[in-house]
Length: 176
Image: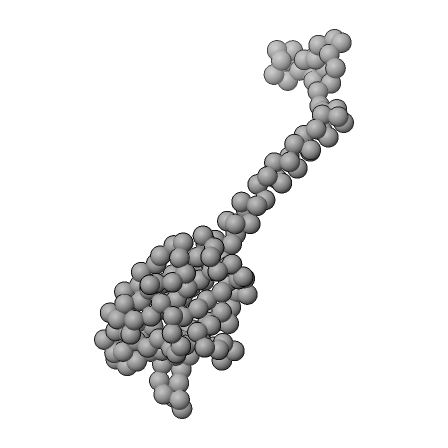
């Protein structure tokens, strides 16, 4: 057996009278209490962060639906419509939306977005958003904010120009 320290037994490296390493129960309890205090301090900012991600996710989903609808309208040479699902009423789009092409009898659903009940989505006016064969639409504005928090700093507004350009505004839920 080699005695140069590389393959020496573990006892050969310990000092006589040295106590074994590790934590005492008191040290472990202090560490747990400190971790709990830090978690309690971080939790409110974490919930705000999650709120912001939810709102941004729904705004990005609608923006992606608009880009998709516009490109499909140009590609197909016919109007493509983004409309709220049947469960929505008036200006409320919180129940989700779908992208459709064609008339009533030959209508095809291209994309559907399910709702996130923690985010409120409103359109500036009632009705659908229609992209014509050259990619133009009427002006529209959409507001996104956490459910029950209309004046939230996490709000986002999507403003669509008649040419189909999308402007994203953070911190506000209205375009005008």
